[in-house]
Length: 212
Image (cartoon, rainbow, N blue to C red; front, side, top):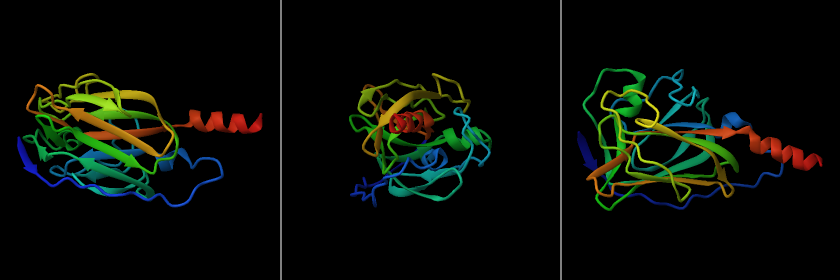
């Protein structure tokens, strides 16, 4: 496994304007994120475990804007804090390898963290992907609540509970969503990718409340 150290990047994120109409379309608030840049991004027709095909954003340890599933600017930004990014030995050139083969990572007592800024408020299904090798994710939290630990899959296969997991109906009420992992007793822990799937349930509830 090759790893490289990078400086942590933090910045203030400014969200422009406030919407007084109904929430934006679901398409514009769902995202595919491939963490690490060694093997390129999956194809746009690759849906991974969520069934959500579309454009994949390639992100390393940085802060940058995100494109939506149609590769249009979304106004949402992602901010990564980690020790660095790295990759495993390539196991072919499949979309699974492009997603799982590279990652961000933390080590010892330094967690990796992924922060989304400027999201549409509502409920999201959050899919997380462990690195291809057996580094694992460490003890993960979503929105500050304990989630799960994934061991990772050396064969770069999508296996629930091994290389991926989903936390459903995660509430975003201030435009912010955070995911983190703590290495703990293992030397390294990382994350290979994230899919945010916006749930229309929130929009339906909003419309129902407005009509009552």
